[in-house]
Length: 365
Image (cartoon, rainbow, N blue to C red; front, side, top):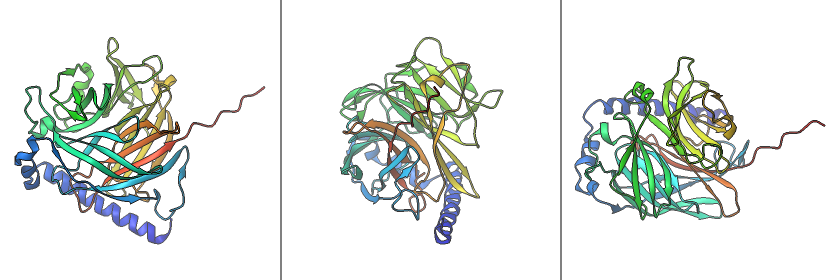
């Protein structure tokens, strides 16, 4: 890394630290901007919004022509902004099989739907965007932070035209079924029962990695990991839900990263998105691939680290992940970030990568 790039990265890490501290202060005090978002009558309605996007053509700073990072190949990215005060804080994502339609949730109790536009393989913008409020069981918009802090979502069944989504909330920890109607989230129908062990989750460290397995022996089961809940051996705790009694899983702790997202692949394996933040170094992102054979109760899961990146890369507070198949059959991974509504320091990013198959292992004769 050049000294100029290192300097920029150091400055960005320092600014990120300031933003994180400011966000922590705002979370514990009266936030006028948040109050405005909550009191604005438009937050109770589904309304179209305008999203502006600036293209990112390289992922690692100072290496503009480098696209391949191990098994991941950078397809392109976007920095997204909007004049709508609700825009930001995105922490969960579903992308349609065609790679265009998407649905995201915000940790301030809103959802965003729209379409990703492309030039070839590279994303170029967001079209037909709408935002609306996440609703309570009685049909009212979620208002209090304790109720509206959505941190993850996954498609349980159907499509983004007509289906059912799971939305995970923290503070008041719950995993909620929401009907999807023409790309919008309707009134929730029921909560998914969580294991008794989930009661140990702290207020701001709830379930943040949720997906529905697409293959393997537990196909159709809900995989849910808490952000930082650990067992007696120090492994992160997760569960397989919805197929009989809950089955507890253990993920190996590596380097002090917290879980922020999960996405299932067709072969029964899973991608786990992780984040680490330190004031001295800013934010880091890691992506692990967990083979289906490792997803067994009683076995410590480790998987393969696909990438581990710091602020020398085009990352921010990356919190959401989704997977779809491109027209050519390749697996495409989409990531988005939570800007904590710190619009002058943090960014709403959308990043896309092709996930290439693992190299075949040589066999002895």
